[in-house]
Image 1 (cartoon, rainbow, N blue to C red):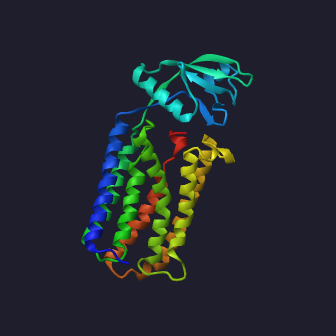
Image 2: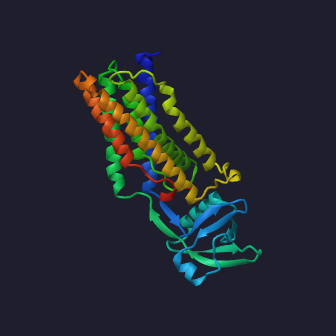
Image 3: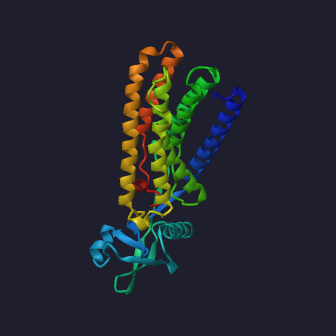
Length: 313
């Protein structure tokens, strides 16, 4: 059932307002924050936080720091998992000078504990490419708003705006690595937006400029819903008992599946759009098709690695 114009207006303003607020707050957060790294790759297991790989400078001088060695304390602060380590490193970054060494206490499989100095490095959370992505994000949402506000009754205008809004989120949102509640929200919304864009695009292609019969539109969202649920369970650490822990390797598998999901649905949607292009009778429809296909393609090329690129894993 079609939404009344007034309700559409309120919904558009609410969605755009919330997204804009979160996006600008995220920009300020990233500009003001530097990520703290220790050079290790970690695996969260039932035992606790284990080394997965060791920085070269430590692995050469301390060959006993092998994969599976347990981290128990940092500067006498107990560490039980990834979230604990992130909070400790953030605390140290706020209270210690750059390139400061922290004392990491490890425990081998025999239960013996040994302390080692580990250098903490700071990395800027805002990169040069972010300026381009910010401009692209506002470009997409501006086009979506322009077409929607000028052509309320045009076929697919509201759906087109939703796609532009999701693209806005994908390009603009970046987690800073601060790992507070706001940063976690940004990270999760960013991942869910990347999963939501392909079915939105395919759904749009199936109904604009003409409806494609024989396909239930709700089915295109099933993979995204399943992948979103799997991601949320994994991110909460609830997949560890079934052999899918929060590790860089497990995250890379998810990223690959997410990207495959994006590409497959985008290609299918593009083929449908090409087939339907000759039915676009108006210049508005042709312009919408041009932006929607270009936007989905840019969304694919602008995809951001999640945890592998420095997230909460």
